[in-house]
Length: 83
Image (cartoon, rainbow, N blue to C red; front, side, top):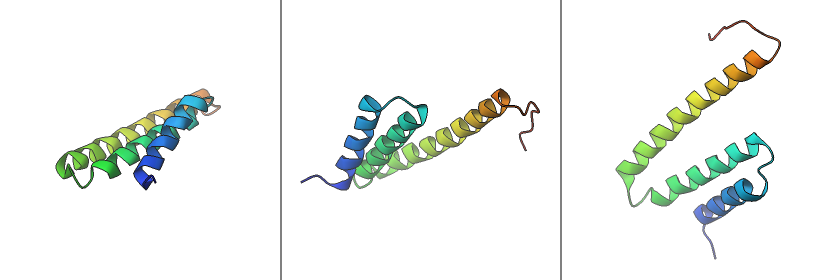
């Protein structure tokens, strides 16, 4: 009935709309939606999909680094060590 990409998109949208109590759940839902968009457009728009993948990986890495830095600063460890 549905293929894998449709199920990923539906489950990501459902997680964001109905189970958005935690920030991590919203992030997981957004990653599911972006993964479904990547896999749906892979065969049709290959160069645009590659750009979307690169931008999403860079965005995820920078976002996780900022999130870890904020979590570290709000915790007990007050030293600013990025290495």
